[in-house]
Length: 289
Image (cartoon, rainbow, N blue to C red; front, side, top):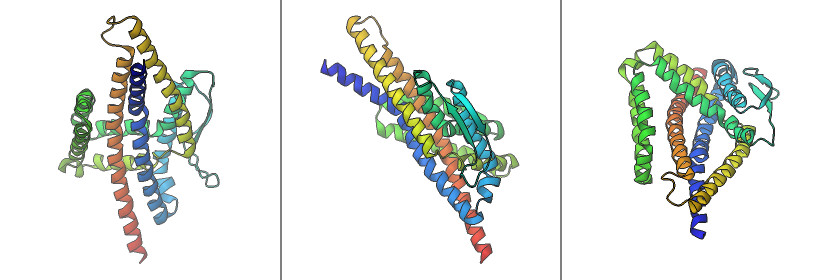
């Protein structure tokens, strides 16, 4: 009995880490990168860059990330402003919504609505790279190879998994920084759009709280699913080659792999944005002297 309970708890926590933990880790990284970049821009040009250079692209993408998941999880959208700077309130846009607290589906939606800006922003960045940059097949192939082989990489242990991520990042950088790209106007247009999106990918405290409420609902569902799986397995031994718990683990692992790839790409773009912000501040400081 105790062994079964232990298995349920371990499976639940493992699945939760792939579904929520990976997003939380990258969310923290992207938050600090975006926050630092925006502070550098603000110190150099007050709010001009943050609002009118990057904000007019980045803010609508951020709010769209919230809005699209409100629609998908059937929340009632009361009001949406994709770009409406308000210096007094300290916001550039917002989505106001309500939901039925009795609905488990809508409760789970809170998690995706909360993290929507970094998830949707990352998808848009990869999509833009695919449609704008010349070596699109390389990025697409890398994505499917990474997701397809992730379960095998993880099975060999954390060191192999981390090595796979590091190798993936190196390949991404090599596919981005090429002679053809550096001499292409399309590449620099992509860098500008990516800079704008990554600058506004950071989650606000209300976003984090909303995601946390949804994460609790996800944890409860995983615990129920794994418990149900163990109960079925106890009554119908050897009846199923793949249990409910196995399927949840497989899909959570694939979701985690896709998240790692997408958010790794966003992290690269955020680091490039940070480098540009540092360069911009240096130029402004030199001019003022």
